Amino acid sequence: MSERLAASRWALLAGNFAVGCGVMVIAGSLNDLTRSLQVSVALGGQLITIGAAVSCIGAPLAAGFIAGTDRRRLLALALAWYALGHALSALAPSYAWLAPLRAVTMIGAAIFSPQAAAAIATMAPPEQRGRAMTFVFLGWSVASVVGMPLHAYVAEAFGWRTAFALVALLSTLAAIWVWSALPDGVKPPKLSLAQWRLVFRQPVLMAIVVVTVFSGAGQFTLFSYFAPYYGQVLGAGAAEISFMFFWFGAWGVVGNIVVTRMIDRVGAARAVAVTLALMAVSLAAWPLGSSIAAMAIVQLGWALGCFASNSAQQARLALAAPAWAPALLALNTSAIYLGQSIGAASGGALVAAQRSYDALHWVSLAWMAAAIALSVWAQGRMERALA
Image 1: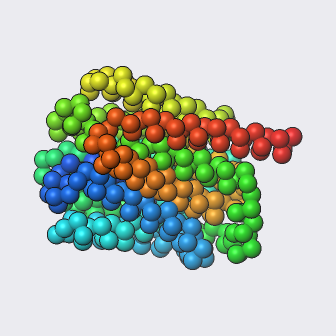
Image 2: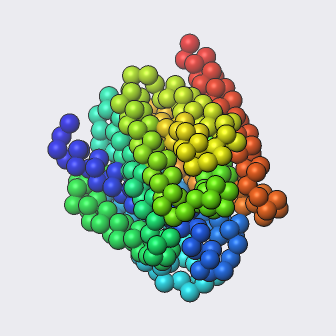
């Protein structure tokens, strides 16, 4: 592997780390944010929905507009935008100001993650593409193991504004790193409108994208409300809440590393199947988590599969149709955020209606079961087409 490619992989990993921290900062700081702005947990959780909805719509639209743009400049600018948005959000005087700022800020996330994957897929030799793409998405796993518990602790100890300011700093540093590491002239193939229409007419590929939607909805129906759940249901304090996010993230990193090392050997579809099944087991066992210690065990499968599943899905799509990779990766990133938006919204509606968290894991499990069924169907269709 060339030194330039290795440096670019690490820089893009750092960029995804910053993006992941920004996406997760709402969930990690939700307790203090809702207290400070005097809004309900359900309304506060809709900030996740707002940001996810913008990213969902923005990822494929951006892929069309910026197709011919040099990725070094594009990715550094996206991170700089992300940094500025979080800095301004930290100064927001009310929820009415924070909500639109969140929407505008997430344009940077909508651009960065899919285009980072497309850039590294363009730079890496064919036999290394699966591993290279899952490597840069390790940044999301590292964000969960470092960023999420750090945000949870910082928000509880110093306030949510400090947590947002920290994301701004991380994004600024990542923008500088990407600018320094990536070479000029990285431009993934540009797709015409006719090619975009052809992509949408591929039922198997679109089904794989929808698997990501279902999986994201299943996770974020419950994940969005981890912090208040730990505090209100399990009686956890700030240190215990931070530990639970750290625990979840640490095993998320382990799962992503395992997938990164094995995906080119076992195949992306099989990796997706295993990670979805692990998450479904955790959701089915959720009622057994009656204490912090028990919940740590229950969440283990979910943590192992969470970020690894998204990484494997990206690789699965890019390897299934390399010529359409930029479009498919943008659509899959859109699907990630659409799933987050659906999950956070449905979870918030349940919490508001029932004034409890009792039904969240069952709804999450239903979404995950749908993801598994659709994934198996899509893989069966693909194998029959190749036979």
